[in-house]
Amino acid sequence: MKKNIFVAFVIVGFILNSCKPNFKHLQKEENNYDITTESQLQDKNYAKKIEDLYDSGKEGNFTGKEDINIYFKIFKQPKKEKAAILISSGRTEAAIKYKELIFDLYNNGYSIYIHDHRGQGLSGRMTEDHDMGYIDDFQYYVDDMKYFYDNYLKPENHKKIFLLAHSMGGAIGLTYMEQYPNDFNAAAFSSPMLGLTPPICTAVKLLVGKEPKYAMGETKYNDDKVAFEENSLTNSKIRYTRMIKAFDKVPKAKLGGATYQWIHSSCNQFGYLFNNLDKIQIPIILFSAQNDAIIDVRAHQKFVDEAIALNKEGRAYVVENAQHELFIEKDEQRVETINEILNFYNDH
Image 1 (tube, helix red, strand yellow):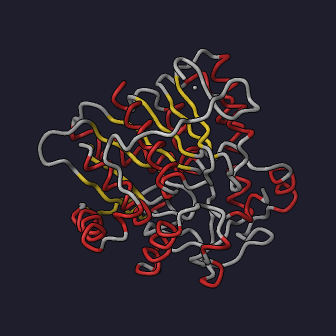
Image 2 (cartoon, rainbow, N blue to C red):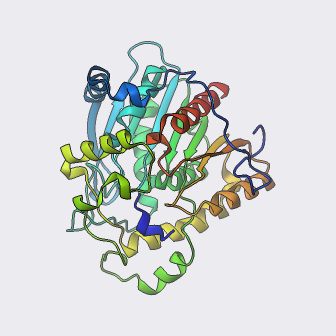
């Protein structure tokens, strides 16, 4: 997710940053699950293994609401599997960005399902301008996920199904859990988008119109604005570079800035999310990046406070010295995050 859009629980409880009494910091951990390291990514043979696994995944398409084409990839374990994981990605993202994470999760015994949300990646667009970050109705994101779940995950009779959601995918995933509380066994959220920095949501009400229009400061995808030194997503140069190269190889998957309509629809969704927290029935683990400059982490505090008041089960952590993109961060932050996610899945 882009910076300029947002002008910027541990047992039976929720946990976040040092100035928040309900939270604690995620501690440095050993690489207990053989998670990929930056040094391994520098090895061409190892990197090729990641690419080969991704290329071996089953790809396909289905028709979502309003006849929008939805692209997906499936990585099914051939024999014994621990469980299945459905990944819900963030704004501007595509399955190709998750190659390394898919590799690590698959090698730990999980089947992986991921689809590109409508309006981004290799899924269909709703505007003539291919680069516009647009959604007319946020509910359609959830409807697409439900179709994917019912038609591709559910028929496989997995022993357990977990949700793994990042950023915008967190807002989609939480809405899904509120509407369909029995579909997942547990859910993990990385830097979930639960709010935008004030006064964005107030201001956009005055600026949104009927026709799709880039929000102030937003433009088409610009290759000149992807330098690592200017990014506010990750401290890992090699992982950032791999992400950019992945999109360069598949230009159709690129997405530019957000429209007023996307921001307005997202802002309306935050109210829905918080008004329906009582409907969540499964355990949640939440990770908030200490140096996140993309989303409003104060919304994480609000979520945790309200979840505690509702006696919801879960865990939450702040990841020290991390930016927004925890799954493409430097080894220390990425390994400790994925370790805790897999520990959490093992417990449920």
